Amino acid sequence: MIQRFIELGEGYGDLFELRELITVNSHRFKHGFIFVSTTKGGQPVLSVAAAFEPATEGGFMPIYICREGIPENSKRLDLFEETVKGLGHEPIKMDVKHSSAYAEKKFYFNHLIAILRLNHYIPPMQ
Image (tube, rainbow, N blue to C red; front, top):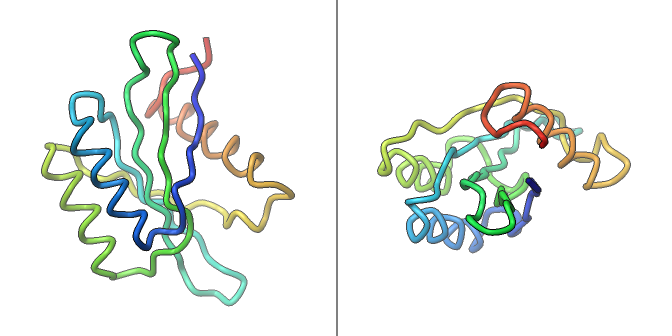
């Protein structure tokens, strides 16, 4: 099984695409995540992500993410939470390091995948 983050953007217009992906693929939707990071200036920023069940063929498990562009207490966050709750799920909130703490984005995404596996939100590597 391959688990990979697919970055849609920073949570502006692409947040609506993420909501559409969740709604259209509701039969595959597994979890909605809110990752809280702190910028160098001390301001919290949020990333929202949606994990889906692996594809029937190939075993690819996508995790779509809008990375670090959503401020706390914003209407965009409310829209994401409403979408996830509308499918009977509760968004999972986690504090994580800001992606700028990593040399490359791929290391940041690998770290997030490890955290999600350790907490049993996504299956272990096979």
